[in-house]
Length: 476
Image (cartoon, rainbow, N blue to C red; front, side, top):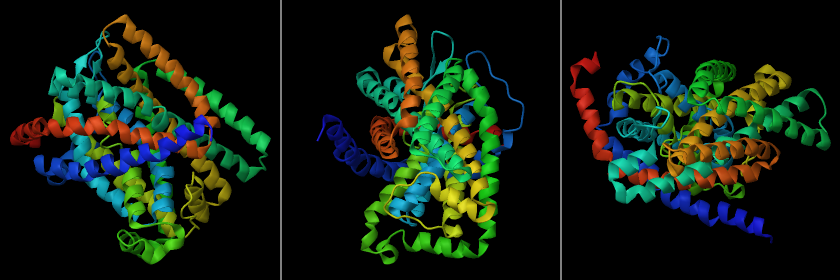
């Protein structure tokens, strides 16, 4: 076994188990319940208020002050990093690797994930600061170091370092790899694609995507916000529309789909048997894991984008966290799952799929050629926007590590951005399994210091929540 194989084995084995089984998953559920109680069930009691003050204000004209973005640009930048392959490919993988019951655990993680993300954003606004350019910067590394004090700066630096590494997996390689796979799939629907042609297409896609990322990334957060503000609503509406059409065409299978989800959430072997390798542990793990990959609640990443918002206060922006998880997981991931299950397409349980499951499901109504082309376009837009969002997260983390108020920090950011652009090409030509293993492991690791900060500062979140909802002017 070579050194690379040994490293990959450690990444996808012991390190992955530690990050997910023994750290992230308990924190996501138990921590989410703890924050729910501490904040008075804010995501349930004030859900209507959250929707009114987020989606209800989407189409109002918004302006931002110097060094900031509008609340809408902040949320679309954050959504750009979450609405992506996690909703399409990630949900497909949850079903294939965890069975239908994984969807139940995906929903459960989202319900408690709403308050987790809300808390992250509240703290990000509470403890943010200006950098040397006058831009607002914030996120877990800032609320850990400022909220917990100087003796915890090591934990803030650990988060920033792990998040900077994670952005190459979740926010880069996994996204561009999915784009490339879907584009090749679209080509294959219209003509035969040889192994040589597939390699050429991967390199072409890698170079083209790298150039596009470079043009937008080097323009800073305002350019990223301007692009995502247009991309996110457009692509989300069309994806929702087409999945609803497919579910409607197979409406007779909807009750059976829900029956399979709930009946196998706790006893997966009752349906799948031992031959698939799907047991309750796998059902829970893949449901929770792909929920986190989709909405990023617990990772603290979205808080980095929200920290730049021109907002009235922490809770005003925190409400967008509730909205984001609801739209991302409860709506879009559920539509993906129901489209696949209701369509009746064959699922290779135990095998990690790419975009082929959702393509096959859409093809039952729209035909293979249209479905392949649509998924290629949808994944390209979804995943590209995710790359933009995570490029910002990585930039902010490097800024924190090397100083956001001096020349050394600016130089480090430029080096990071150049590496990030190069990795786009690497992700396009790398094997699917390798890309997702790297993304999964670093996702779980970066959440550890963030959860410590969330639990330790939960009192601050609770105080800000009580202060906001006790003011009758905020409830009008």
